[in-house]
Image 1: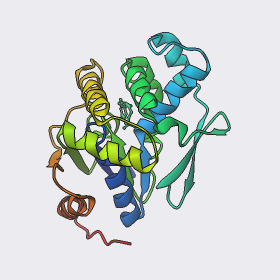
Image 2: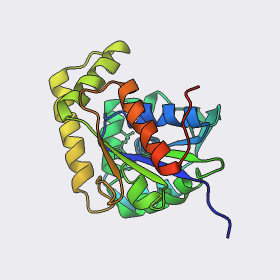
Image 3: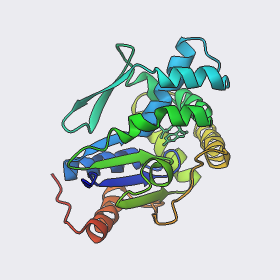
Length: 233
Ligand code: DC
């Protein structure tokens, strides 16, 4: 049997920097990249556009199975435009509101199952960096390396606050702390594929670390587990 291309799974709570770290790593390795949260975000947006309530499990399942979403990739899929029913929704899905809505629709087993194969399809040569909540536990349980990033809720809220401020958005830090804590609780306590580290994952606490410092640790793990050096592009 042919061996499947290697996968590096990066999981962790919202705002921990999985996206930034995952993209950088995929870029350095010249591998494909899966932002699995984007799928749940697109689904919740589609639900809103089609007047499907975010707690209507059956209708959400049907919508997930027929979701007309494309990831238009530039350069090995690291920076993808997200297209829903022919419309570019890359920026629309990134709001806090859509993050919360995504967290709600992602609780249902039928929804998760309907999106499973789309995620597995990203596993293409020469390799895949996949980030989300259940990459190492459910979608790619045989991943060559599983990283679980954590950081204090306060620090995650502050990072998010700075990001949103830079985009010129008017947000309150206190609101972000509450939103992040609520989303953590929902993602961790759901019955299906809850946010938790896989037994064989490497836990990385990024509190107090900048991106470069996290990348140094991530690269060391890649070298240790996959046996090759990661060179920065
Ligand atoms: O990573 P994100 O913030 O874009 O994810 C949005 C929501 O989608 C998150 O709060 C829970 C859900 N999600 C999930 O259930 N499983 C994943 N693998 C990725 C995201």
